[in-house]
Image (cartoon, rainbow, N blue to C red; front, side):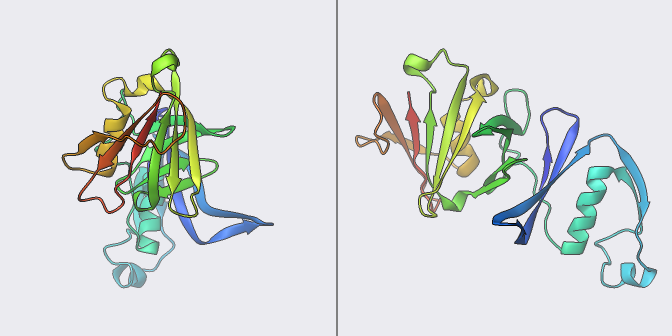
Length: 227
């Protein structure tokens, strides 16, 4: 994954590892690298002409003169034969950035919306496929706490009900759109139909529940809004 940080100075490259790296009992399924966006390099691959014209023809070049993050991404793509994933073009913040600053517990990072998933980096690197999402809950987005500058998003997955909470998201990042619209357009790219649910799935006071019906989306992900 090639993820441009909102600071306009760095780009992150995230590589999925199968099997994950292990350190004791801890597993690390992703490797996250940071590069200066404007730093260019000139390199020549240590490969023979026979290899470049044979096994890696059309995949690798013998010489690169480009920004460092671009070179690393192209080399990994050529060697692994995998597509380089970038943030979805359908999503951008109020400042035209593809990443949103937030936190998982005490760890600050950025949440990116990809074409088929969410990705939080750098630590803990967290990947959530849209196909595995069962419900999305947005907390502190209005009502008595409307003066708050931040809100939270909790994503529950079908994998044993595991939850991922992304906290302290600046509400002004999305000044031009409602949060529900952004999440909907990220997951389902078609006309959406919304209805009010009479049985909220989250037992909290003053809760209004918006359930998204998405005929083309197999997961039919409900989006719950907590005020």
